[in-house]
Image 1 (cartoon, rainbow, N blue to C red):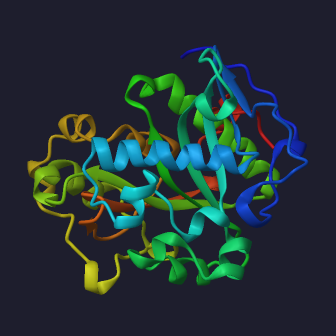
Image 2 (image 1 turned 180 degrees about the vertical axis):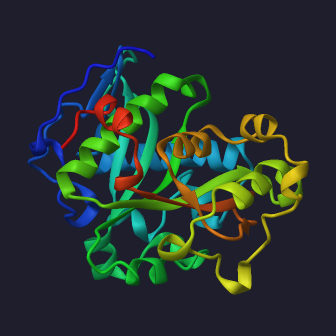
Length: 287
């Protein structure tokens, strides 16, 4: 693995204030690899830059349907942007202000904020609320809108994001990470082997079971278990899904076709207690 320099200071984290920007937040990184640094957005300009990056990837590169407002502003934006924390990856070797150095982003929504502002983003596709209600003593974090520019889609960028997420999780006392991950395209059968592998081997059971909402449910078990080549299935999975699997995540029952974004979405559930000690040590030390 690449060597990762990592330092943690709770003062770097935002506290869920309106516009997800805390004036007192510092510019110190949550993680650093070479010229890449990860930290939370500290200004509206940085959030707007992240929205433009998402537009570039989701709409211009991957072909998401352009709503009129998105087309005019050249931004991917919704009501959740004002209540989420925005984890950003900067390439400090690029010229210009910080907003011009953003090459990746992740959106983080804590349970306390979701409860106060109308729920989680993923609840439109999966029965997330039922999962949360089943665990009244646990603190959930929703991760979403993961986006990295093509030139930075590498192992070290993913490692950097997880370093920063782990710091955030420790600081806020998060017990469970959850949210949607996507396969490109709106035909689940095109990902039959990968989806079937998840369905047969990685579906959350009992207390961690969660289903796609009935009106949007599409089956994932498209092939019998004995017909699946595990190596081929894993190779075919998006890097984000493979990253979740390595950490010990389970997946929901059923997938959802998102025609607006041109994706097939699966639901990820990752209890902190399920993460291997070696990953906890690697991503910042045991708490």
